[in-house]
Length: 181
Length: 349
Image (cartoon, rainbow over all chains, first blue to last red; front, side, top):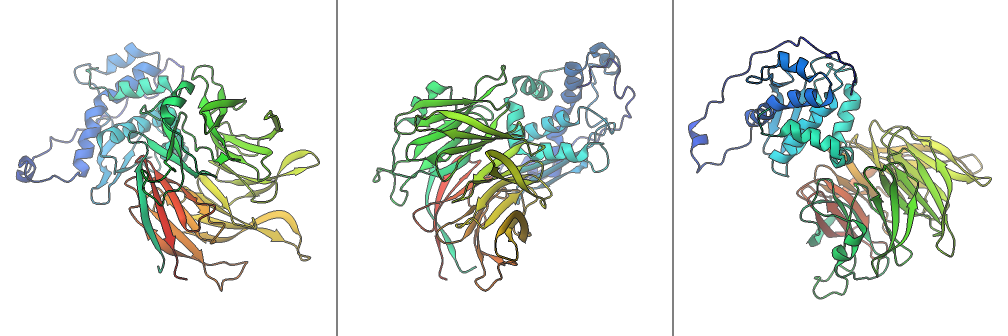
């Protein structure tokens, strides 16, 4: 990670968050099994998103207070607000047990891309039933090392090894913790 | 598809962790309480990234009747594990210490769980180990991008005779030619390298390029004239040693067949049965497939067809396939779901 004191992207574009999920009558009825759909996965992602960027930046860059200044602790920027994840880029096929997420790094040289991708992948691995195949990719054309990052996130030996790295696991866990930031 | 893969036995080998590797023991063996005994070596179970290896013997009978109870061994680092060799020995790779950054390979006695030898040298996880047919040479490969060749003398002393740095990324798999001292390695750099000893020095004789993503595993056919490779690009390729006009070989290899369109996700393992010639694959789509070569197809353009396919052979990725070396048609598979399955491949042809 960059040891510089300058933020890579000090003034990110901020996007509107999508509205709350509307519950259908079937979903409220406990007798009807709900299929896992795009929105549900997206909600899982948004839930963790509030923590992810904040933790990633505050743990790995020496400019914590700088981030805090742009990041109101009451309303920390979420990955959704930064358009890192969008619902249209989350594809779920419950029947075939496939989940695919494309995420968009805020800038094409974002050095956090692998860590953001890894956090998303780990969160989904922990949240979804084991039967799901989880593919996490960078939105095509949005990152300089897109292919290398995608290949790394797709290699389960490398993902398993990364999670054996105590330091990295701690960072990922911080990204995913439900404690308030 | 005229042939069948019939499930004989399913073992929940590692309920809490993935099973990366399955191998047939060369002789019936039984190792009681393998987990407990081996825990003295720092083996853990159930933590993130813990992996496991198993040997399984004589599976045609239910385990309570058979002395061939499954041997269960849990390995620590995420590496594809070790074939049992020359009767008793089993290799395991262990990370010595997360902090010191050194890595070890341990030779274990399968019958009396104890560590016989520790091999050090690789700078990162050891991914795969393989014995040469002679039993005197051992090849290891690692995420440190290197392939090491070790010589073993009669006193069980291991000496590194060569460090090969032909790959530019993690080396995932090494396999020896079934009769010659010829070694092949597969890597994250999408390539396969073939090594041979030349004037007391090991060197890369051929680089096989064609896959468009990580090559996960390799398997030679019975006489070693062809090599199958499988990849994250969802294909399997068959490579053949080139012959010159006078029938001799010059050490170069070419791709004579690509099996694409059959697998929908990464192909993690491929195994060529040396008894029947059938080619089995382990796929990230949970399926196990067996391919057969068309009898009439030409040597330079072989045609392979799927002869058996079990689409949900496991409930998660299938990581490894292994044909029993003595019993034709007996196939073992293992999966991220922690289970080992034993199949009987039956061909009417």
